[in-house]
Image 1 (cartoon, helix red, strand yellow):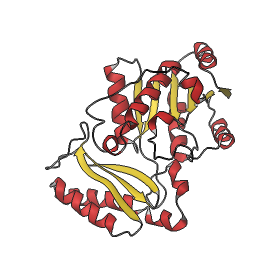
Image 2: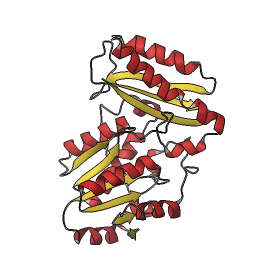
Image 3: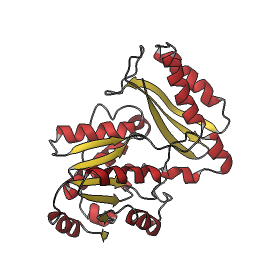
Image 4: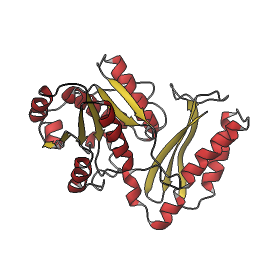
Length: 277
């Protein structure tokens, strides 16, 4: 596995690749969710490129950029075990050199949910992903469904900017008790880790209500919030039942609909979602 840190080195390596290239963009501190993306890319492409870059542009001033978990040596070992061809680990200065002043904004779908709670977040996401796509030039890029809104944003950007590549969505990987795998789970104390299962329980409640015939979006949301509030360690940021493509609130739920939530467990903010079917 080549470990490259500059755009020029990555482009040189990319120019020698023959056949399809699968790309997995990450912020590192890898878990089985990331490795599932890598394995899917490995299965479907002749070459696999993974990036690790903790993107400062997508963190707000009060968010956890400085404390975001990092362990490059561990990540390299995991990726070598997955037969990755190239690992790209650029510095902030390499991605955003002095005088950098160009940004990518995707409108409409970014105005709700994460976009409302984290102003500027998706501008940072779209900008760095556009840059990485331009550098790597993948045949396919692999993203997890856990970040459902991010997936929609990237798909919209690729479509609107006529990028010649496919976006492959990979199902969320969960712990045995249902908690979605996330690099931020490491922040949770043992008691908070137990409490964090309330996210999955609330999503299961939404699916159960919908399966039994409840079609009122407000009723589903209210019952999800009531359940989350029963957990003393949990504080709701948002709970939503929305159109799966536009993320507009649904008063009458029709499949496919996206039930999503963001919940604080202590000082850790977790997100998750489920498609109501």
